[in-house]
Image 1: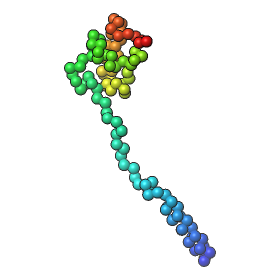
Image 2: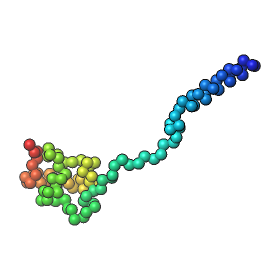
Image 3: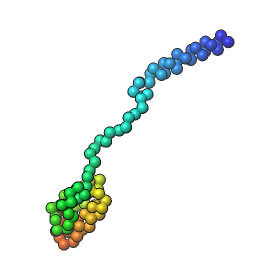
Image 4: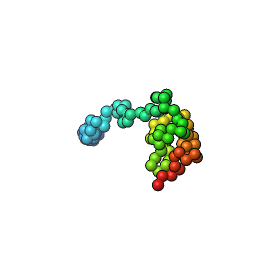
Length: 104
């Protein structure tokens, strides 16, 4: 019986040493993450005066890359409804040669 108590006593300091080696920061519960970026708001929903029209090339060019591709929603910040309308108007403007298909 005395041998068992010495083995158990020997194991207890090792367990305490293992708990001490873990940093206190690792034991804490993580808090909610803060957003790292500002949420983009659709320009067309925000300002009702800004209308998507194939004749307004100055507005359409803001949503086209230097290669002539249309910008995706996550980069342009438009909602799904206005992104679809924007794609249609860009295609119309290209068909009547207001906007080039590809810029060189």
